[in-house]
View 1 (spheres, rainbow, N blue to C red):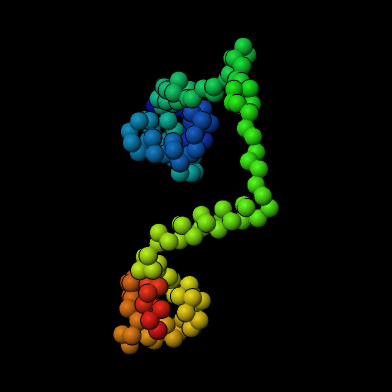
View 2 (cartoon, rainbow, N blue to C red):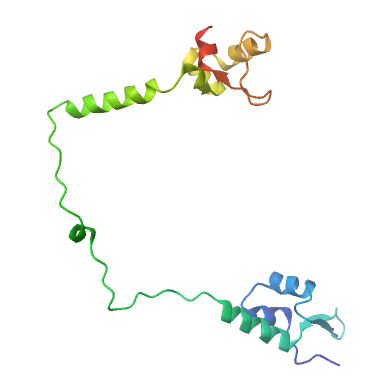
Length: 162
């Protein structure tokens, strides 16, 4: 058998609509029969069973996702037409800043100092000491490490004790 009418790897990939590498994988997985066509003076050329190529191409075409197209008669109401009118709250000058400050203060009061953990860069900024100094204090046992040996972390309460 000469396999003259069997498609090459590139032809099979184009017909199926995949890459050449995918065609190779399909052949390795025994989903695509592969043979080698002799070439005079060269290495044999990989070719694939035409029936397998057509079967896989039709399976891919049948399983391809179809785009969703909105029917022309469908109308989506705009949010403005379905929601009641919203009125803007009137605030005295400075009232917004006061409300924002109160919200921030309430959020911060829920955080305990022991919950705050800093990276070495953040700890250096917070404690106004260099990362080298913090590392030396950690090695000497004067500053507990809340992280790992490779990735140290520092608790705020420990930094406040320095």
